[in-house]
Length: 143
Image (cartoon, rainbow, N blue to C red; front, side, top):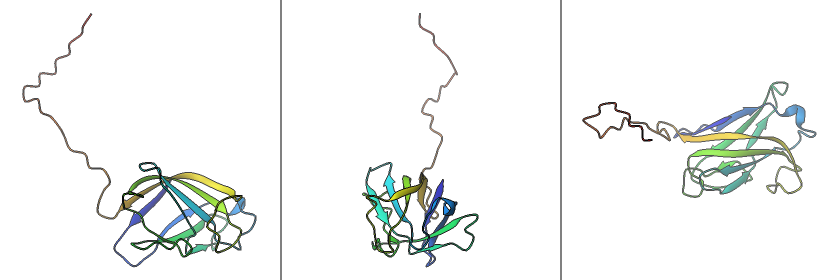
């Protein structure tokens, strides 16, 4: 599973996936499609960089999670009503160029799950809920 965290820093968000052995051409940045499980909306983008320094172990993907949207440069805009925080289905494609953002006809090299959250703002908070002040732990069985 991929973990993406939107932060206030100027650093890019990265994730690492072991896909190099499935790629037939590493000359181009892979194409990534994110599909929100909450809204059903999809977004396809190139990472602004893909590093193959440790290709025998993983490929590093770099994205800017920001307020602007430039899919060819890796600027993605998550955390809104169309693409909310939460779980995403992710498909990574072997790309045919460094400017192509259409997955039609491309080979999928990885499919999985991603969790997108904002730093310091957990997506889910759990609190105890008990409105029964006279809770007696009774169990009633009806025949």
